[in-house]
Length: 402
Image (cartoon, rainbow, N blue to C red):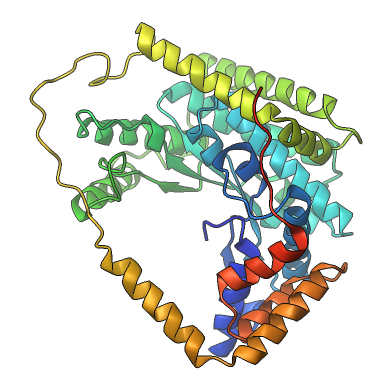
């Protein structure tokens, strides 16, 4: 479930929907993204200030550890950091630092890191620089295992594994000559597979323009299937391990990433990674690092030192117009009507009382997941639940970059 700011509310809705069909929490499996650090760093889709969001994530980690052990409450996402304009090393450093912060959060709740770390996963971008991306994925596994063992005391081998999903780089796709995007996606997907990804999302050729058409989505799917069924690249683990260049690239990305960890910890008032992340968010440091990287990339494009086929080299004047998917405004009207009907049919007094109990609980130290589930059972909507929490937690505005 790719959701972050309101992730705990979505989990509660999922759990209550299962409950109404006769399933217990201990039967539920799945993964929720829930990664709020990357929202402040890159994607900008938060609801509250950082600390209340971290409280909700801690509540979710603790609740699922006790009641839904098959459910994975957190998938730390670097994809959106890279799509915002970061370098490969920035993507890896900021993502793994967020992962370490969530480890610290679980430890602060008194949970066994050997158990809850097994239920964390990651989500990375596969960009177009083929060997750099492979090195990034290989470095990620080494760094995660080393830090969990040496800094956080993990002793169970299974808990040291870095599980990750990869999506090809939407930001690498071009509106010019969109058929070229099929090639870009195939190269990026191959890098992800050779780098060791456990699951994969291939972007469609027209995603730079709109949601994918059926034809474009099928081509993206077939790209994965050709790699899986015809090429043999999945037959061995770490197939490029031992290559002089790949090993050098892995070491280089790892060293650059460790340098960023040093800079994050230097900002920390309490010596924790979490403290460094929160200070970097508060001061706009992450925003500045990514903005500077994006600016350097744009300069390379304009000067021609970075070449993109169809954009600044090998252009064409006679491109055919691409048929894209168009969504009717009727979809929005139908959903608005459905929501209004739902609200009209429910017990409004019961809903209001449940939301008041949620506000009261938010002012305490209670775990909020059961209280949010009660609000869902009382037919409160996503917006109403988030609004009740905003009444207590407030909202957040990121600092301007000077």
